[in-house]
Length: 318
Image 1: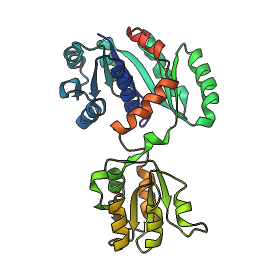
Image 2: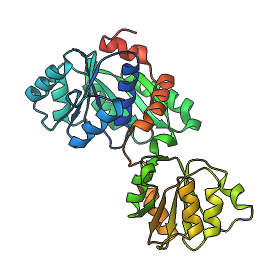
Image 3: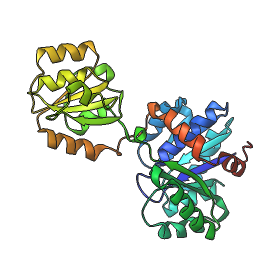
């Protein structure tokens, strides 16, 4: 059975997104895929199952790193599968469990930070390590990162399997997640709580016409004081994913009516605009992966992942 263990030695490197993108690509190619979440939270396996459209039995949470338990779970799950993707950490016990079942390993690393410490752990994996995927690379630094990473890994005899650019769509929050991040109340538009917010704008004093100002960005959240219905109405004339009204209270009737007509959720929060923005900024990048982000991740992998080398290492062919 082919088993790929996807790990990272740092939090927030994007290994869940990588697992989802790889699994989605294989499924699109007609392959059969299973998923195991080793450690973490049980809901992580449920989320991945939902993202990939897997049955409950094909997306499993395992809270034990005991090699026997891991091997038993993989054996059961692998029946009829082309690949079992197992996601977990880079702790010694986790890697030993992966080694015990003969899994190949891909390490996901976020751009930036010290590579030297990670290199030692990479080298310790020996031929079990298929390579490293460098994630969240700013576009302007892609070539520099490729050159530096290839050189550093090459000296250690390790392959650079992929270089994935930073993409704001993968950091996007849903409307519901945004409301939760600021302890806001969703006054209307609950049916759109799962829509992704791709950008942010602040209602402020502007010198240009309101619709021209707010029209500069699409699928955005507009954060604006509740006592500025003029700004709110201008924002609703443009591509707005949701509106956050700061200072508490209910929106004016014309605003509520237009928001309902355009199906734009309205969130009310008691704090001022600066405090609300701070809460949103702290939440950005900490949101989970969901099915709406899968096409974006698939596209990044198609362009930036050395799939032939990865598939060959897993015995999957081209």
